[in-house]
Image 1 (cartoon, one colour):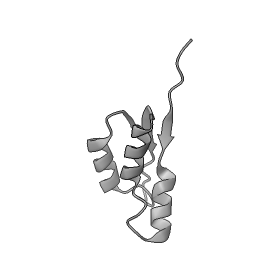
Image 2 (cartoon, one colour; image 1 turned 90 degrees about the vertical axis):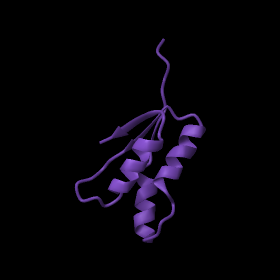
Image 3 (spheres, helix red, strand yellow; image 1 turned 180 degrees about the vertical axis):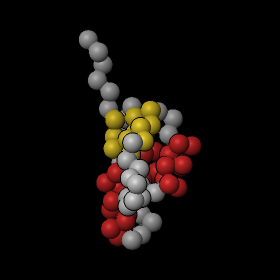
Image 4 (cartoon, helix red, strand yellow; image 1 turned 135 degrees about the vertical axis):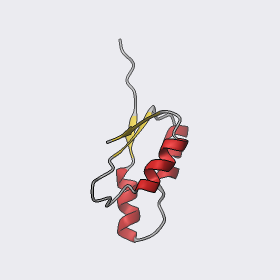
Length: 72
């Protein structure tokens, strides 16, 4: 039987940050926490209008996530 893998989508963390017009909560920190908690991968959607996940977030995630990173 194939083992089930857990992927965590952190888009909503960025949505909260943008709605608050603040620097927190941080999607990169959320990805680190999810990974430390056992997530097998992190997923984010880099929208064309950059409304939520920002290019800086994507770059920091590329540098820091040591599990599977799915940027759509």
